[in-house]
Length: 418
Ligand code: ATP
Ligand code: MG
Image (cartoon, rainbow, N blue to C red; front, top):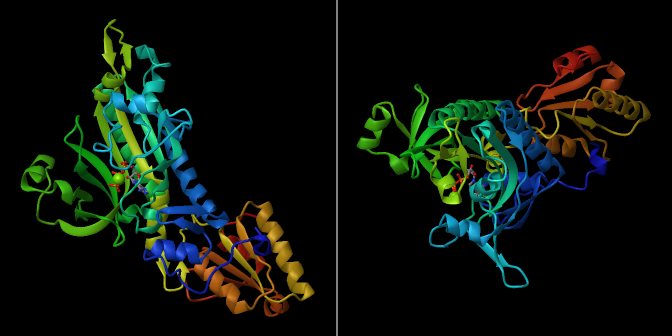
């Protein structure tokens, strides 16, 4: 990507109408655009981060033997009535509208009902189970407050996975596999150390559900965490009885603010019974399917990463999600500099190394400031000086120290095989 072709611009000042640090930084760096409170567009650099996060999640979900699909955003009222979730008193985040002929439709805030109903077309025998599907979907929720930037959107991207199992045992095994896969996801995006499986409010089937909570001052939740034992319990269920049931000791628990980046949930057979999803087991008996529901807030996760990995100069993306691995800054436009920078850009492209090539005619200070604000992990500078000395100036975003490297060492340092 050439910066001269990128339409977005960074801004020297933080947006006045944002209090959340994630949104302030992301807007300032040109990653997102605010349409209104809780509603953000993802610009080219922001979209790259989003896609990187999605790809990590996708790989882990595929490894579970789960298949990706995409459901609709317009939903039928009747289906939600079947499970008593159309009522605004029951679900307080509905956006609703109607067709020209007056037929009411809901704008999707979740998809358990739709996917489960659809599965009736495909699941009728034990041979059809287990079935596990997931999607990345833009959910629409009329949230009362949206002051946390992209961490609480009225329109936001969620990864939601649904598991259809034959028995509680089969369900539990998959539930445990998802738990492990989620921990791998949070590890891969750099939040492994501060993300905890947290016991939280359950549903009709289980007394507790499991949330994945990342410690963050920007989070809206409060949890009690034992950092040594890597366990946590949400404030909303924290009491002596729950601690006893969960086998959690009170000593060693620390109260912290956290952001719920994921949530996994057992529905038992209740929802499939309501919607009529049954299968014939190998004993010839018709039984309801066991449902599990597993969410990750993709855009919230991006916000949490932005909050956590930032400093006074801007964003500091972990390499796994960064919009580019290298920020290549060309200083000045002398022919030798231009041709060496173009060559290195070419080489990076050929090796599949993502690079943002700052080929603009602006002052060096502006280029360095942008590299820092955008949080690209590595910066390479090519100038009259470096060309004369036949070296490249290299600096990691997190380091204060630049080093002078020859081409071989530069490629080695960047893990590029020659
Ligand atoms: P919260 O308690 O934060 O409102 P929730 O319990 O409503 O979350 P779920 O319906 O379980 O969340 O959604 C799954 C995941 O989607 C959550 O764990 C969270 O990461 C994310 N999420 C939920 N609501 C939002 C939102 N308004 N904006 C961004 N992400 C969200
Ligand atoms: Mg909610």
